[in-house]
Amino acid sequence: MALFDSSTLASETYALAASNEPIAALVKEALKVIDGVLDEYGPDKVSLSFNGGKDCTILLHLYAAALAKRTISPAIPAFYIPVPSPFPALESFISHAARVYNLSVFTCAPPCFPVASAETLTRVGDAPTKGTDNMRQALELYRARFPEVEAILIGTRRTDPHGATLDFRVKTDPDWPPFVRVHPIINWDYADVWTFLRRLEIPYCSLYDEGYTSLGSTYNTFRNPALLVNDEDGIQAQSRSFLNPPTGSIPETVALAPTKMTTHAILDGSAVTSPDSKPPSCADIEPRSTILPKPPSVQPEQGDLPDVSSLQMIASDPVTACCPIQQAITTPGKAEPGVPEDGRVGDDCDSHEAANRAAATPRYRPAYELTDAAHERLGRGTHAPVLNS
Image: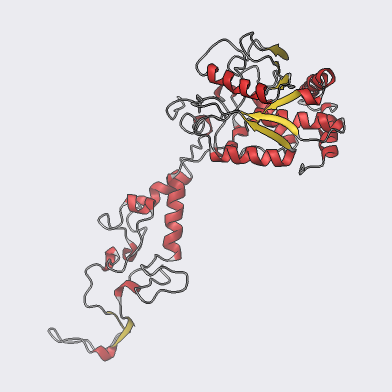
């Protein structure tokens, strides 16, 4: 069963199409194409290509709205052609969408499937290119399993590879399984995609919130460099100031000795006190008792030992007195609840380490903040891309 109210979905979508909002004309156009296909073929002969990408997600929502308006509630037929080494988050979203929209998804996975895009199925029946033989095999599998299907809804847009000359309906080539490819959102641009998704609060794959703008396999898909946050005065600057503090900015008792707590140790979390290692500032303190003078008292003559009666014992182990920002550092056999026996740094040390870890990790804006549509596919390739300024 679908997890949304189908009547509400239909009314909201068609109301948007009839509104005066800038996106309305494109929504109306797409629904008109879908309604025309349903009128001609009927829902039993129409299927949806769904790969979890943003464009397919829009198409799924539009198609579900068109079916709901006709009070058609059976499972929506769809097929999924997986890419090699897919993102787990993408496949999780596909499963989620199948539950929410009541999809009946058939997975077409021929052996040795080539790298493809999760955005759209753009090469169904196009001129031969790398990987089209396996794409053809996938559609042959689907055709053999569902011979009644004649039309396939595909989320191709004009700016996609091989999309520039497509019309709303295109038949596959003679040497391909016979289908009519239907492209309801062919005239949408990148900004339109995100306007629609966000306007109707439609769930989409979480990868788009992590800097990805076009999805494929894990080894040829990277975060878009156009969305990289260049925070020179913010977190990145904070990282530099923590790793290379100005003189006197950190108390001597917590100074980071390069030989004990290197930058690498701070970043990878290995800078944690262990039972057999003392904090750098305490490494050579002897004896094993730390003492602190009381206010002015009897001063011993040169060469005499101090009178311990004038001294106050504050800790029997220098490890517990070394770093004033530490609440406690446990030792073997004395671990506190929830604290491992090998010891841990205090909360303030943890917070510094966590802040430094975050600062060392590049941050990316979500996909909907990309302002130049020409950069949509910058994250695709065999190597992590770099945006030339």
